[in-house]
Image (cartoon, rainbow, N blue to C red; front, side, top):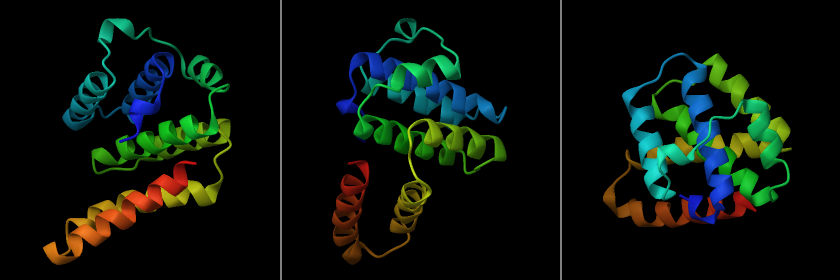
Length: 146
């Protein structure tokens, strides 16, 4: 959603975190695999450009990134964690480590999670309410990422 704001270096580091998160619960779903492929395409990266780094190396490299960049990365990781329909203990622990490293407080973490729940709920409302709900959600997430 906001990945176009990442530099090439940050994009590569983001993909490393995505791969780490996708494997943390030992359940690498087809949806997660497809999402990684979609991320690579969206970021104009080839998988050969992405050197494998450990979680700690990746976090250290992202520690100097702007707060907004860190929020974008965390936000996207929350979305990935929810894509397989499961939010495992391992994924929760992983996201908690990322949030701690990026100094993302619990209120913002909860707001990001609630955003994705609201997106899911959006598909359950009538067409008449759709446009106003989309505008509201776009506004909310833009405020959260700052």
